[in-house]
Image 1 (cartoon, rainbow, N blue to C red):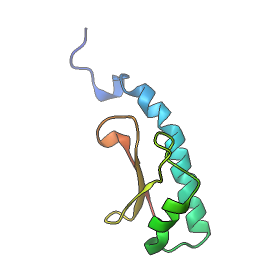
Image 2: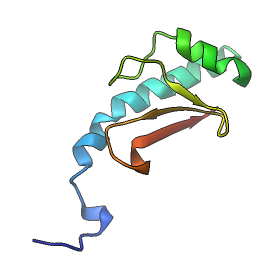
Image 3: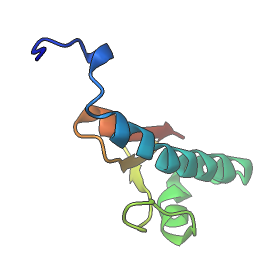
Image 4: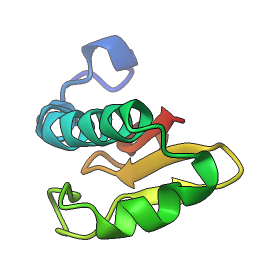
Length: 88
């Protein structure tokens, strides 16, 4: 058993990361759609709530990080790698 496996070779979280691809795709489509419609950053939270594009795990709306000006969601992978930000 290898105890000091570099992160590059640690496949334990690979399944969660791959599953998050659908959430990443949805968030990217949502961000692109809002930008193409010219939605102002101040109006994004309301647009996220009203959107039919939802977080795949909860079916809830994507979140807005005011400090980062980003559409965000938490995926299945634990820790920082599970947080996905789409700067607006």
